[in-house]
Length: 307
Image (tube, rainbow, N blue to C red; front, side):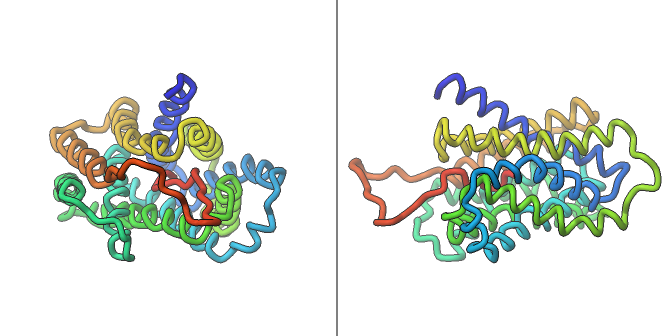
């Protein structure tokens, strides 16, 4: 991988690893709808003009139904659930639970009839990763945090379903348009709830900075960097950064919020990340070119649980 590719890879891991920290800061002072609205509105304000200038709006109109479905399971539900969960959970624990998305994705793919056979290594990865989730969540299931853990797992489910919708129904829609219009739709939906829960007083500078960073840095800039990364190194290599995000989330929570770094977190981190890698490992294909079906089109910038 080139120097530029490595730089984009590291930057991507940070940009989608620190939202958990910023969400944790923001929900201490403003409502969940306000957090989601600020992030989506700021992100849309940057990406939507770029998408409109790029054209292909006719494709957006033709795919509005699957685009709405994608938006619902990738942004509308998950970003609210994630923000609400962080009123109870630490940002580091939330980031680790979200790391189970690849594992959930493998299970869902099998349930919907994925033809790819799971070998012993991938089955072992599923079991190891799920064990890591249980190790991390078990101490919280008997108290008030049980609901929050369930919310995060619903987020993981949504993040696993969204790429399936994108791959099956949105392959003709360029990634920039998909991201921009999804954010715009979400911003419109959350305008009313945000207005109803508008804070009585001006949030602190720290909270305002967190909201701005969520929208401009972790959403708008992150999508732009993501597209550049995919162009530079390809989809399969580029998506490996999803295994880096949880490490960034844990480190940020420990360093900036003084969240605990316990043996349980270390063990679950190793199990979830190791299980995710094993569960998503690709089987080696026989040598020789494998022609794609005539007329097939791939969108290399489809994210898996990245938002």
